[in-house]
Image (cartoon, one colour):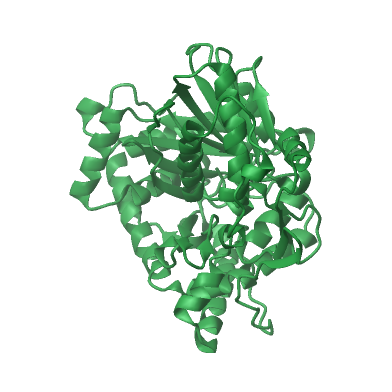
Length: 510
């Protein structure tokens, strides 16, 4: 799915150096804490509020369990209640308006009546719909909960997947302001383990929920441990902000020369509607692809980004382009411990834009050669952005400029958009969860989200060695058939790396 970051903003010469702290949780009354959003959290939350829920996420996980549906429902309810304390980011409330600063709020549950009200709003059992329809519903409306609190759906078999009537599906709807793909997987591992451990024959009471130390489990910004660990001086902060400002200058100066995705011309007549495309390689193809990339000494991240850039060129090029502006996500986990003593950081990603100048010879050979040439160029251009943690000190500056841009703009127009790529890595989702009383087998992980935006980013992850490509886009700006073709090209371009004997079933058409 497209990330939550906005395109870079231009430099403001007399801009003051903003605060670089991540905000502090403060108790406002018994059992209630608040803090201002910080860094990317601000831009994400604000963007969701002014763009009708843009980038609210939905996660879909099909699974089997050796219990009756009645006991499964009871265990899910109890596990969700336990999570209110153990993983409190699921219950954090966010601002829903345009006020600044955007705020976070967390309230413990003081009574069973409060727990019942929270459960009624955020936990739903679905027995008469399939999981795909529930997922589609979640990403074609904004989150209806108080403060955009997370929602959990248990879609029970046999309707969850009519082709696999014994399977059930977890559907989790959440705000990107308090999660990224890494913390999403961490939560799922925790939640499924909890399901195997909690009681399945009775409702838990709030008196059984341990809130001791909960403030230390509340989500924090990457800025907090960064400041404590690296203690940036004024020169380092100024340099980081100058680098962020140059991103805006570079974006604006190169956009006219870049390959780009072009929205439909009749967007005024088209309605907003989220579409999600998911393509996979077989396990054999995935392993062959990774083996070939190891021989070429190129990571799957750079190869997939290159396949995306090439697909944009193949689909949209008009002949004047001299290179590609490419947005790529990066993660502060490279520099700070996101599960450390300072607190948990569930949202640590941001975005950087690169300029990839084309060389004519890159496109005169095979598709495989083109992908490898572009991949090496992307690696070279991204490298300087990964050598220092101090970009983190510019997060408040970047987010403030993004909010200013959103506040000053109306609905996006049909302007060309630079390609974007979100590498999500090898997911650490466990397959099996067992206790003396329950056993769960997880079958898949499907990552989708709400798109009310003219920018469509390609995502890639591997799960249990199998590679998945995905994109989410708004049908107001892009035609689904055209995006099917674009994603098939992206998949085919990346597959050009695979030896021929493994390629059966991979074409540039769906």
